[in-house]
Image (cartoon, rainbow, N blue to C red):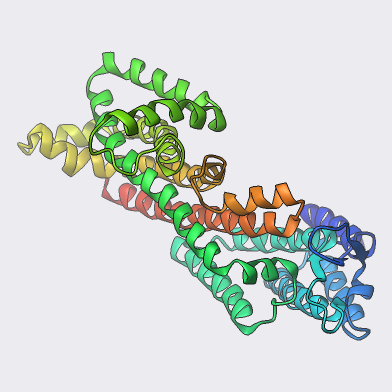
Length: 386
């Protein structure tokens, strides 16, 4: 009898084997900036829990390696991820010397590789389940609730990233608010300006190429360069234009304008493509019903083009969540403040304090908007005449 291996499972098993037995699970540092000492799973956890975690990840890797039932693969990935999430907190408490408030315990490469491997297994299982859009959002909510429960319970208080958060809790939420405001505010402004511009480009063919080429050129300018280019004109506006309150050459204003400019191309281009893809038969039927051009636009064309337009909005939101990190370089705030402070202080945990929520927000936004696109596309197909 020949044993059959799952192709993805071979990759996952290889990652798990290296991460569990060769890579460090946690890093112990005397303080937040000095080089750390690597600890394996058996060294980072109490004598009973270290072998238990190794057993869990090995069994989960074997489940991934073999062509096992889908339910078993999902269960193995969830159990492995839950064990890793719980025990990294235990490792922080176990490795921290009693009464020592300066020591820092950080997840090491082995932990992150194990998280990656079993998240890959979980994602593969969920993809094979072919979940409906509401179900995918439900999985995201459950995962967010589980992480929130771990944070509230205090199980993760020992790892150093949470100690960095404890020292900066007020500024963390303030910078987080700025980050969200920059990302969502620039998106909203781009939608308000980009939708009418996209409709105009669709209607006036001579205008289309020129507008899209200009927006394409803006999109190719590196973010740091665009921020720098905006400092001088916005500084002039702040100095010479009466009533230009809040506008300065550095800070939120140039960051907002830059993100707005980057957002225009996906919104305008997808509006043009979406409207161009509206079936001719739908427009002919609307004309036959006596609809005027404005009624056809808002009653027929725009609803049918909306899934494509929403795809552009999804691109913009994920892009802006990432680019808003760079705004910290010109005083725009956001989670980039912690990233660049951490780089300057050689404090990796401070870098993670800014990077992890940024990645989490982008990931959640992508899942929610992907589900919304699929739901609107389904309604579009149902609404089209046979």
